[in-house]
Image (cartoon, rainbow over all chains, first blue to last red; front, side, top):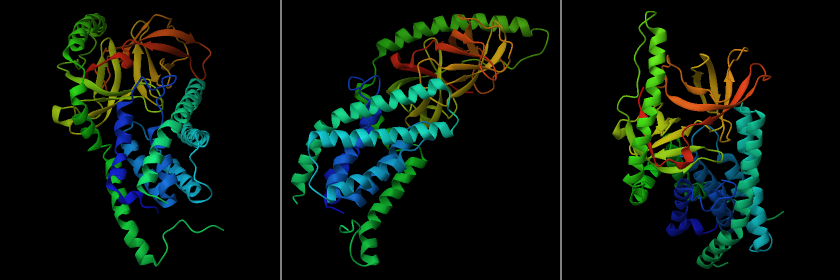
Length: 167
Length: 247
């Protein structure tokens, strides 16, 4: 684990994720879809603080967001997986900070999250063609808006958090 | 092989490092189990200054009167049909609870709204939520100060409805799109575009004869029974105040 999780202000920033998810600002949407705020927060967190912290943060975010959502679909497994993956990427090799890299990682993460929710809908029996078209649209729109925002929001978070924890 | 990402040292030391996070996860698990108690209430408290003002509430009340008029027509027709046959339990909207919409996600994976009233105001799980024009969803879970409402358009949402003109029952299934699908139980369907869809007059889960939607198109070759696409009368993405009605 890194040291980011020992700074209360950094941990408290995670509280913004469920609050912004509830506020769901309509002016920041693409095709009616708002970005995945969990992915936008978890990506820089895991890159800075490592895989174990990433897994725990992913589980924590997933639990809260599941609690605030209708239905039985869960985000926990994919957010934990993403936290682990991005944590390992942050620990091995050169630091990830280029806009394209951040955008691509956020895009892949949101697509994975979308596919997992889509799969859960299929398991629940929501498999009509209209529902499939909705799921595809939601996956693509959410991953695109998240990928576009990640370089802006993620770079800013990385900058602040890396300053607080110099290598 | 790179260095292990897990904490180094003995198991005891690792456990000492990680136990506060496990406790935190446990607490968050409780949040998950209680469907957002604490977080949703905190959000309601923080966002209270930004809740919609009373102007739209008045507009909604006048729309509510129009809704009541159409509902009265349905009830009269229903009573005429049932008169002399049996005495049906009289279910009505009664005194609904007005609640502000404090969070809304009409699109996306979770199509829901959060209301600024909850358990303390008498709202309970399963209550019907109506906007100007008709039913928009049902309360899925409640916290002391908020209620989470699953919209009729949400994928997986299923509500029993009927078409008063043809007296046929159907299931209104949310597809994630703005237009839910009507799945009929009979194969011989006489419904046509423009027909009103309402809650069943004998419904025990929802208030009876509540307008829900208008049939937009019919697919008579649906398998195993015909289906139809409907347009909801009340638009959840443009409503700031709703009425919550208990069973």
